[in-house]
Image 1 (cartoon, rainbow, N blue to C red):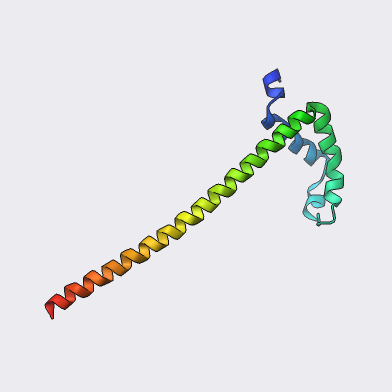
Image 2 (cartoon, rainbow, N blue to C red; image 1 turned 180 degrees about the horizontal axis):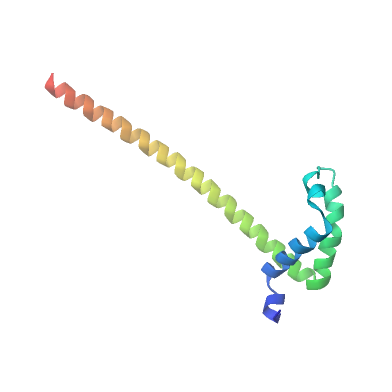
Length: 109
């Protein structure tokens, strides 16, 4: 592992995931509730990553994850807005077609 890889948030996250699944089995994860039991079991994993990379690198990685979540949220909102705009455009086009057909038929009567 090169020094640039050691400082990579992607590598920090990859190590966290690897350490997490070594410490916490799938049944514990699947049966986790909101009582914080999973957080207590995951704390040693977090401590191990901090020990390996330092608090600054873990904080940087968390910040990048938060930015990514924010961007994904904005993208989903934009897609929903686009879908709504498309539905409105389709409705207007349908109304125009109906109006044009009505005028066309009226011209024959």
